[in-house]
Image (cartoon, rainbow, N blue to C red; front, top):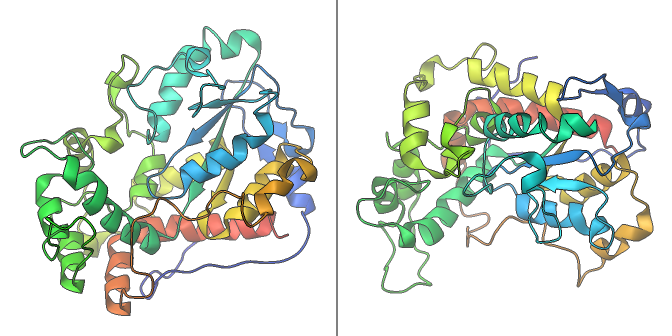
Length: 349
């Protein structure tokens, strides 16, 4: 499958209909070495573990909150990371990182499989992966505004243990009056300079998050996940950096690996632009009745579909900047188009 990413500036689609037979018949790989499952026969039990792979700036926190609602009073399904005190899944998984907020698939999978030899596999349980993806252009814009407002003020002058280094913070905040916290001034050139900076390794962050090999061995012993630690992230991805003009989404190892992993290991991948349809689709897959979720669609109680407030100026980013963002995120654009096509086919209601 190939996609034209040359003129991509962001997209969102929705296809009405009913839950198709192909959704019910598709196989769901078991990640603990057991036989393959089918969605129609899928029965989540107390020994299973749903593993949420939280990609930065993809509304993952809101999606997790919505996905967990059904189990607040009767936590039959164990989620990892648990998110709240009601879901003590750390010991069950055998995985004890310092922070699980944005760990990559490889980190989580390695950690959980190591623990499953003592817990999940012994009990006959399975690890089933879930994720939320976002339009790559919108995700990158959101990271720019979120990072400069929330990551940069916490950054010590010589720190490399944050998602951004100081060099990116200086570029992103160049037009702001930092003595005024509410000042959100920026120029299009600020975004482009930040985008093109050699210190910016956040391009194609969604693909990198899922692709094989994004490991941080210290995670099992309580270390920080690589995605939130710039020094480790730089060490891992700088050696794999491909010149923009030479990137081929059909053969790039990270691109190929990420799509294969999603097909082989993920129970479900939602789409941020269709947040509520994603919630409903996962709900149906897990066999949750509609009345349990009715409050999600009331105007005053439902969780926000947007990712964390970043003060990103909607509609103010011109087309030429969006095209540049898409070009730097070719791998993410390709993966996102595949995921949305699959999502629209399997969740058409």
